[in-house]
Image (cartoon, rainbow, N blue to C red; front, side, top):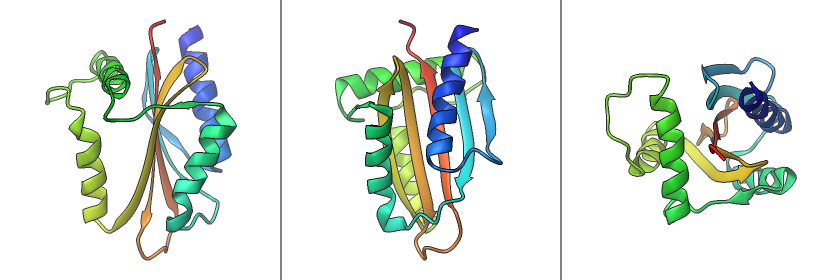
Length: 149
């Protein structure tokens, strides 16, 4: 129960910071993993998403993890394992999945920015994406995972 509260608290803080809490929905809500989707009510410009994420990382006092580092591979593996404990996944664990997600969204004409990090002894992955025309909302997806510590 403590893990679940910790995950919800961090996810709530992220979604509130981005003004994406209202109307957000959990895609997966389990003891060790939480995936939430929503869209920001802020008028975030596509070319400002990087700065927004940089400021969010500072606000959370989070340690950014390079996706392509050993620590990034380890964190993604933990998240993947926690997801697989709760849903059937028809593919092998793959660090390149994040890059494929980014490319897929870009091919659908979205600008994409993401961060992988650790805050409050909890791992998280956040992706912001918005239509390249700068029309419409900025979408937010987060994965918050217990690190098993």
